[in-house]
Structure formats: C-alpha cells, structure tokens
Amino acid sequence: TLPAHWQISQEAFSDEQWYWPVRQLKFLARFPHKYDSWLGWGHTIPNGDPAEPFAENTRQNGMIVLPSLLVDEVFHTLEIDQDKCINFYSLVPLYEEEMMLKLEQGSDALLDLFDKYQVSDLVDVARINVVTGRK
Image (cartoon, rainbow, N blue to C red; front, top):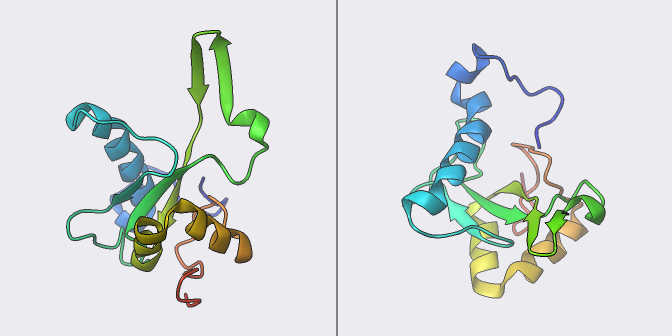
C-alpha cells in the first residue's frame, strides 16, 4: 500500500527509492515457485542474506505478510466456492529489530507494538521502529 505522494512513473522507477516496493512484490510473487515453498499470514522475508535496507532512504530491510491493516476484515478473503477461497495480504516493511522480535517472540508481540504505535500497511520509509521507539 503506497502513499499518495509515491512516484510510480517509469522514469521514477529507475530510482530504487521509488521502485523497491514493486521489486519486492515481484520477488515475492516468484518466491513460492522458485523455492518450492509458500507465503502466508505472518511470514517474514529479509531483503537478502544478510538483510540490507531496501533503498538509501530507509533502514527497513524485511517484510511481513499480513492482512491489510487499513481495510475491513470483509475484504481479507473472497470465497469463490465451497472449495476455493482467496486470501488477500499486504506486505509491511520491517526494521531489523522488528524482524528479530517477530522471530524470537512471535507475530503477536510485533502486532501488539504495531497497535501501540498505530502502524499500518501504508508504506512509510521513515516510520517509527516499534522496537526501539526511534525513526
């Protein structure tokens, strides 16, 4: 979920500070096929090994897969028929400390801090790090 000011032109995408969310979507769309795996609620994915910031304008270097924190729950799933249901997820960028908290204490610990600091899935390259309390 990108903010209204986000540059989304072909020209802007030549600059990684604008392109990285699209790059991450493309990478994660291929991830299950490339690694014979799957992605779902609460999975975290670092940006490389070791994880590096997505761009020069942020220290965020990982993602967590969550239902959108901005839309009503009724929009999280779409039942096609009794055998098929489509889940809709968002990718929330994470700082290294947030990723470690989730891995060590679980998703609930991280989501409690997201609630405390009112973090949503709207990309904010300078949002507060909910573990350290700093930007």
